[in-house]
Image (cartoon, rainbow, N blue to C red; front, side, top):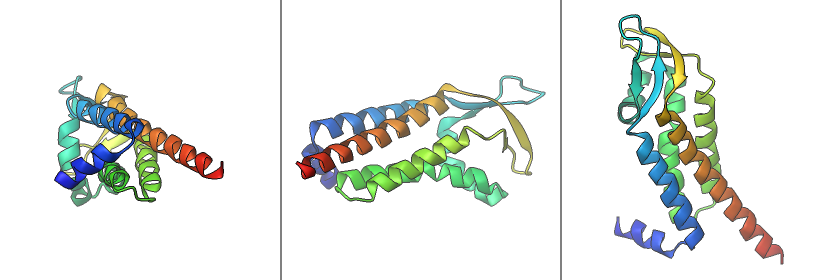
Length: 156
């Protein structure tokens, strides 16, 4: 952990701001509803972002393959930050992969909401989803811009 903190301290100021802003958005997203679903017994039903983050991997056990693949955006996001801290080239690929997976979730119309395999219609996205997506986009754009600046400086 100390190595990661030291790696963070050695990053350019620009990258420190990008990572800090992205992580703040990500953590804030975990405190908000991710999306709302249709439930006759509870018209205000929503999915909790923190629960989805911690237990989303279990959707694979219920047969929900697409939501599991989209949930993989979370570990890819964390791997991206680790690669940035270690100054590895793969960071650009992983950060955009996680962002694309997050954007694909926007297209889902329904999602498995019970262990028995029942699906619910997604009636809307909550603030947690938008904060979550923003954290990915901020990191992806920040890494891309930094990479462009590095490449431009190499050409000069």
